[in-house]
Image (tube, rainbow, N blue to C red; front, side, top):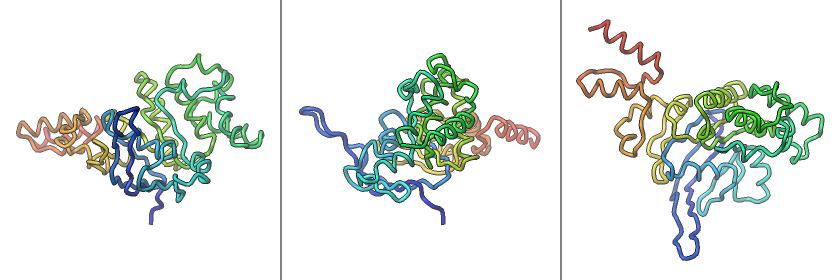
Length: 284
């Protein structure tokens, strides 16, 4: 039986109203399980609830109803809070908001120091984390001199130096150029595959979601699709109905099918799409 890293049961959450404004209901009875060691992408438009959900995974936000359990720990239990935040690391959109020191290695050491880790162990963790994100050679650099992608990798190193079992990334590439986006996505994929770290990636970029084992699509605080990238992205009409696109490869095959062809829609990569088209042309 698979072990669940995160279990969301009957989650209700509402933002309190400001002054005379009413409360804003985000979730009502949401249920979700995330398997340990998996790579899950959560997709949806701004305002659909995906970032609010992410903040429940390490108790930045607490349920107004229902529960969220992280590796068996209830986020509503104040005594569990520190251990939950050690277990689930968060990386946000803007790396500048997470970088606190003037030297890269000092920044990565910040969280373990605050956790009371021994200095020799901190040194090991910092070196290991920087090597894992491909930034060890920059350990004595000033973070503000680095590119956006490099800064985000430093932010990820700072989280993994805490040795979390799960890392949640809330739109980590939103402020990056294409090269920075590729760097960060390669780092995330490597952490999942080589370290068996549970990864939850909040995004609205389809090519990023294709890299995951599982894609969850949210709309208006609910889950409207959940499955492998192939299972989710073949539901073109459903995704378009909530204003989301599909990968360009799927879009091409879908439009060809609308014109009378019969092609499989689950060829998500450029290579697999090209292979489908090549095979079709050879057969006809």
